Image 1 (tube, rainbow, N blue to C red):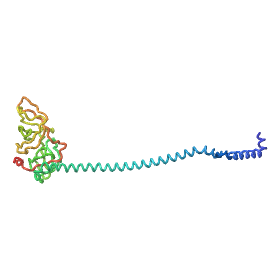
Image 2 (image 1 turned 60 degrees about the vertical axis):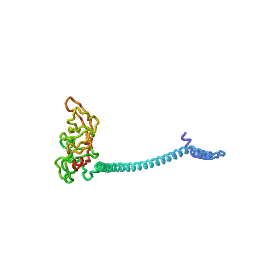
Image 3 (image 1 turned 90 degrees about the vertical axis):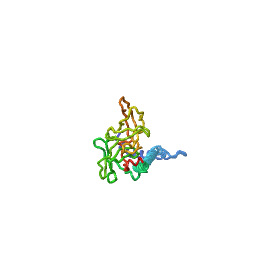
Image 4 (image 1 turned 180 degrees about the horizontal axis):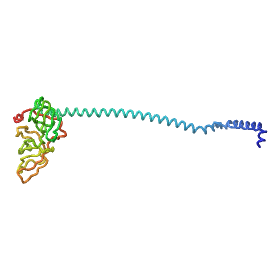
Length: 279
């Protein structure tokens, strides 16, 4: 068989060329009004490929648009976050400024009639042994302070009195929660006078509150009487928490002062003579 092909090689090549030419002619023959066969073949083969390529690049374009939009959104989010951060801190600073202005305004309203006899001060230290005994303030002799001057908080509640030593730029304030303190108080304007002393734990108690006397009662507000010649009358001191009546002559009365040590910051020192309040 191979010898036959080798002998007739020229004839085989010729026949193959003729057949190939006939095939090319046949696929280019128009089929009526239809597309030529070659176009149909190419269309059938490459149309799906073209569709896939177009879809791929369209999807790629959409992905790029989404990516660009996402980047723009993230950029705007970062800018807004930075603006919010700045605004939030500006708001905090503004609140602090407004609070300071409010405190100063309240002090002026509370002590408006004594504007030239009130010295504003801030707490700069606590008693190392017991913080409920005394605090250090940033005012002293240079500001006209002296021993036994009355100290109030920013809302007019009694805090204590100035005690020695009084330095040039600082002074010590004895709190009414100190066990060694003493304030003449009573419930309202008609209550029986008694003595309030500190318990050393942030609370106070009444001494010499007779069991036979109906007042004070839990919830009563205690005010200073001025009978001790140190604290002027009428300042709020604390609220009665509990009243324990005993067979003894005096009852146990627990009192919570109106000021809170952890919130004690701005104070007012009254430089006026306590006797001037009795006029």
